[in-house]
Amino acid sequence: MMGTTAVLSRDEIYEKLKGYLEDLFEVPPDRVSLDARLFDDLDLDSIDAVDLVVKLQELTGRKFKPEEFKSVRTVGDVLDQVQALLVE
Image (cartoon, rainbow, N blue to C red; front, side, top):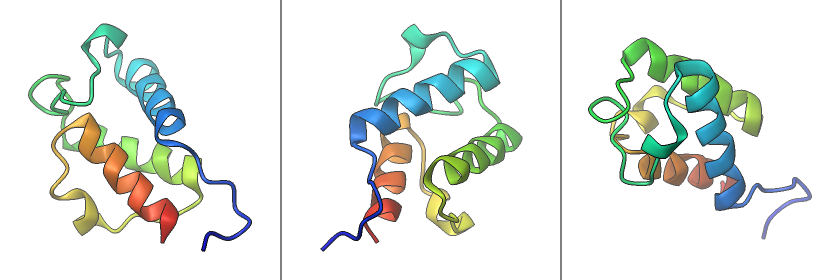
């Protein structure tokens, strides 16, 4: 079962993620969807991806292993990874 740590809902994570994409990388909010590809659709590069991981680590208080993010391609993939980490 889950511990006493408050777990963010998928919607809360999604809202935070959209905010980060808008604030850090100037991605227009209307371009962010679960199917949006980070590199192809949102024009992020590998350095942006690292910055995003750092922000998500601050949000969750958890460390991400680089290999966990190697398969991440879309905004939905990011959500899946963050949620998986939060329920570990």
